[in-house]
Image 1: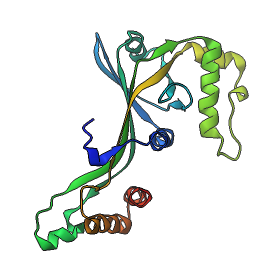
Image 2 (image 1 turned 90 degrees about the vertical axis):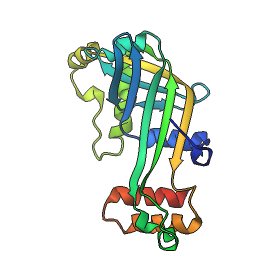
Image 3 (image 1 turned 120 degrees about the vertical axis):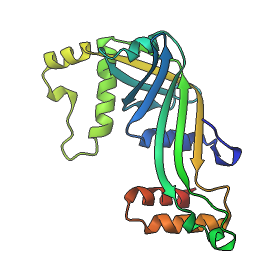
Image 4 (image 1 turned 180 degrees about the vertical axis):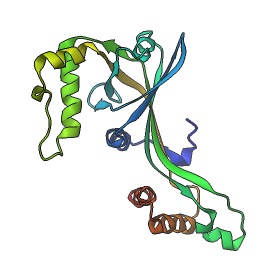
Length: 209
């Protein structure tokens, strides 16, 4: 990922929060069969390793886990808030007109090499943690124990888990830091006025920065 110095995020806690808040990540790796991408909910163990370790699982029928098992580097992309930025929001447009559209966004890239596993006990613990994370806020959370034990055992045989210790972590917060304070304020105002909640989410991130 190309990250100009002004847009680079070096705060590990901020990048970890972005990883946790991202509900669906994109796992990309390359092997003898070429590039493969899978879209997955992942679990971060922030206290494991220098940058943390990511955990997830793939369908056994998905050849992606075999590419992971080859030991090559994998890339996991976590996409945060994003929005189109209109040149009309820049006060600079009225001053000299030398403005163009752009796209502002937040993204985190995690690099590492995965260990795959299919041990039933370890898979069950992973599924339990992932389920708890997403069910916990619900009024009546579903738990794995709610399903028949033999049914869950069959499901476990149909998946392969992986642990991916993060070896390199990149964060890009493209929020107009290269623009003047007046232009940044104009963009935030424009995003706040939008009826699209995704624009409002990026405006809030500009305020939080």
